[in-house]
Length: 552
Ligand code: NAD
Figure 1 (tube, rainbow, N blue to C red):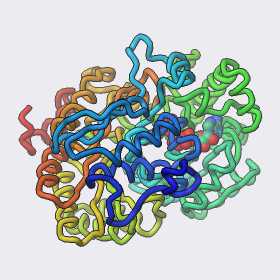
Figure 2: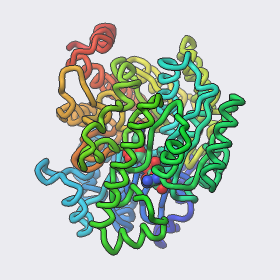
Figure 3: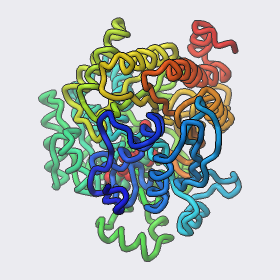
């Protein structure tokens, strides 16, 4: 009823349980996942429809949100809702196996694909920024990124520190929706984390969800404590309330070199996401509104300094990498010519996994009952008995990760594994071992769904970093295969002009028809990644393609 009386997004709106509000479970899943994206426990700023990642939104405005909800409730099993940059524009006849929703977010013709032009269109109410899983309704809170961040730090530890971050000082900044996973991922790898964020409430939010252990306001006190934890080999994380450049400068001035160094401030968005130095949060809000051009100029200047500091600390021995926010790209734009002297995390640590079709597979229990996720956890452990790191992850996730919104789980699964899991989940639903269907999706940061030359496709073997045919083919094949909703986005992660990527969600409702779709989609979707990497010349991908007879 609250939906029809106007939405109060400061309260939970996601329906749970096993009764339908829509005409089928797929529509219901889209409705629940859309509202789950805006759950106050999930979204960063639900009242502004902002889910995560700077201004990544779930719907263009409140009117659009209400209309999407209405459309989903009325949508038949042989119809498809079209969403254009967060606004529902039409319902067209399709068929039962077609996606129930098709979404395109933030697409611009390349010559006009600038932040400035996007901002003008957004101001006029003609577009919205979909980020990755914000506008494609499969964000599950910070857990979604914890696994990826855990994998990254684990790969780093394996490469540089014999497999553990024990007794290592890991410095970073940005504790937002995604960046907030860093402290937990670091302590899960046994390291000390010292992370800066200018916004106190962000750190408080991470404290509430147990992603960070301590908040400290004094810079030197935070540094001293982190050093003491390092010495005692204690896996503890500290959030310090300050600008990233202040923290790095103090480390440089005190001659302290962190063992690892990265950053997850929202540098992809110089106006809304990044905070220039020298301004309080309130002052920044005023300047952003009164003089956006000056704000952006200041942001760029701070980002240039930020990267220079990282380069300096890298020189003194810190293992330094870009964490997918385009900070290096921004610094390069304003003349830091050696900005790319430190690598991005994908070529450094993640690409070999992509070559096996591995990536952030995730699912949520539409019932809202955590027990349903524990059932799926049990099943995953049974399905992949040989995968030790998966077993370790599920155990740690159960112990340390608080659910946000609809209970959900993530783990990196590859070619072959995803369809196996999807079909097993469908059976679980059919047998009534869970209370409602399970919705399965993934990040757009995945093996075969993104072209992003400063991040996922940085330094491809054949130089095809900027080729964006792959994510388009990914969206098309997932549509053809019968995913439940499919989205094609522009600008996620690294900002307008820098990336094209596709999303996919599919519902396991326990029916035989769903099983057929799941088998197809969860085969084809990771296969796109294996094919893309094999085509670029990666041997691991070629072997994976052979093993799974991908018919290159
Ligand atoms: P967010 O907007 O929710 O949070 C960003 C945080 O950075 C905010 O808390 C903000 O206060 C803080 N911040 C901004 N400028 C700062 C500065 N100069 N000093 C200190 N703190 C500052 O964004 P998010 O969802 O956490 O994503 C962060 C960035 O990481 C984005 O650019 C996003 O695209 C990128 N990202 C990377 C990955 C990955 O896998 N590497 C995944 C998702 C997102």
